Amino acid sequence: MSRLIAGAIAASMALAPSLASAADAARGKELWEARCTGCHSLDANRVGPLHKGVFGREAGTAPGFSYSPALKNAGPTWGETTLDKWLAGPSQFVPGSRMGFSVGEATDRGDIIAYLKSVSGR
Ligand code: HEC
Image (tube, rainbow, N blue to C red; front, side):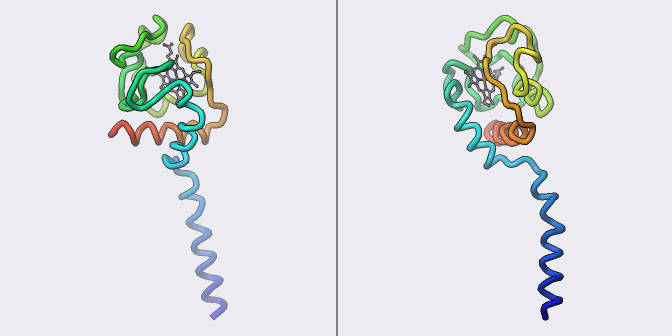
């Protein structure tokens, strides 16, 4: 009996790492609310452009937002790789852009990007 229980525990522990390594959109939502909503919202342009639909959108193209010329002309399409570079260091990725905020932890960036993807329907 106890061998059976030990076996079940070992099996569930073996599964854990693969689950933990996947980007976590629920955690990303919490991080986004804590760090990004000072300047961004999903549905309206504020200090920064609206975020709904940003995943898969070309940079600098939210209607009605007044972008820096640098970001407007830079032209990346926002996906996992470009968003990761942008969030790690906006002014390194797009020199002359005006977002004075970055996210140092790769795991945090991955989770935030998973959340942005989930609200963009892609
Ligand atoms: C201090 C205000 C501020 C904070 C905080 C902030 N941003 Fe921004 N963000 C901006 C501004 C301003 C721009 C436009 C930059 C430009 O025009 O060069 C921008 C642009 C962007 C863009 C490009 C959008 C597009 O339409 O091309 C993305 C993506 C983005 N921000 C994501 C984030 C995320 C994710 C967070 C939270 C981790 C965040 N931002 C936090 C001010 C902010």
